[in-house]
Every structure is written in C-alpha cells, then in structure tokens.
Amino acid sequence: MSIGKLWNFFGSRRGMIILIIQFVLLLAFLLYYTGYQSSNRCVSCHADTIRMTKLGYPQFVMTREQVQKESRHPNTECRDCHLGNGLSDDPDKAHKGMLKLIVLDNDLNIMPRKGHVERLLPSGNDRLRAMLPRDKNGELDYDVGTLMWHDRDPVTLGYDPAIAKKTCGKSACHPDQVAQFDTSIMGSNYRQRSMRTWNDIHGPNN
Image 1 (cartoon, rainbow, N blue to C red):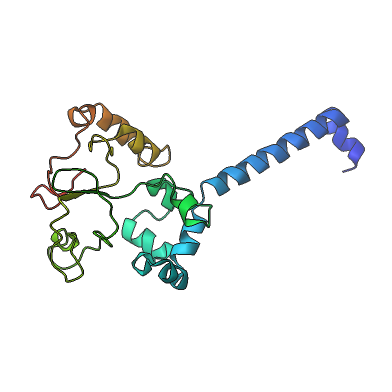
Image 2: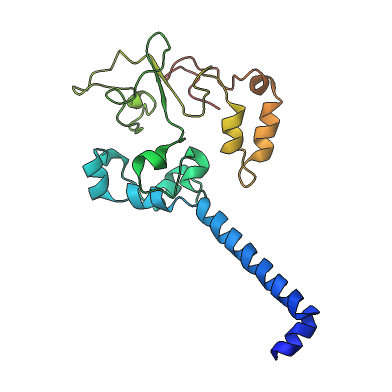
C-alpha cells in the first residue's frame, strides 16, 4: 500500500500523522505504566546471595519462584503487597514507603525492629510460637511485647482502610472483598482482629 493510499485511508496526511502520534504516545504510556508496576529490582537484589550477604541480610535472600510459591499469588508483584519502589537499586529508595512489621514493647510503644527481630520463619508444629523474637542465645526476647502485621495503622495500631485499598483492594486483586469488609462492623470500627498478642489463641486472623 503506497503512502498516498494510506493518507486516503486516514482521510488526510495530517489525520494519519495525528493517529500515529497518538498510537506512539499510548504505547509509551503502556510501557511506562507496566515498568512502574514492576518489581524487577526487588527480585534482582533479593535473589543475589552475595549482595544480600554484604548488606548484612542473608536471611532475606529469595527468588521470584520462592515468593510466588509461598504467597500462592503467582501473578502478583512484590510492590502489590509491600508497596515501596520496585524500580530502584538503592536500598533506601527501594524501601521508602514500604510496609514493615510493627514491633511493640510491653507498653505498646513502637520499638526498632533491628536488634530484636531479625527474621520471621515459621517452623515445626507450633509455627506461630516459633516466630517469637529471641536473643542471640535463643532465649525469648522479653523486651518485645508483641508483633503486628504491617497492614496496621502505626498510630492507632488498628485496621487501616487506606493501606488495604493500596494493596489487597487494588482493582486486579480483591477490591470487592475490601469494600465489603469496610462496611462490616469490624471494618467500620477499624478492628479486624480479636487477637491481643502475637501468639493469642485467636491467632493473627484477618
């Protein structure tokens, strides 16, 4: 098909140019949006055993396959659940805005995780108790009052609808369930769990 026939197909030379520009802009936007949602840097860093060891966190080495198998969400990106910046190679920038475990002392004040909670790996028959913080000698760390999942409001320590909408409630995940929960008694009073401590008999339900 000659250029002249293409012009006639689009109505005019100007119309063809405008449509081509629109197509290029749409393609560029789709590529940018796809890249923005990517967690490639999360995976490339955390799957690098040597780099993670040099940074002092060998316990956080994991591959994409391992994450997808354990989370049972094969098509979900890291940042879909944890937020943060999945495109940065810089640890500080990558972890900025990322949801993190909340560690509380015995007076329910937020305390630093470092030096108290190095890793949370369930094991054995009592998987929940196995994750209780311990010191270097393997004894329970009694400075830690309790642990809370990262989806809590760090001020009220209760349910945070804003976090839920950014993560589980995203359009491609579970928006209907989050919207329904927000109208329930537990959701409207910002308490979606009955547990009071990490190893409460009720468990960390949500």
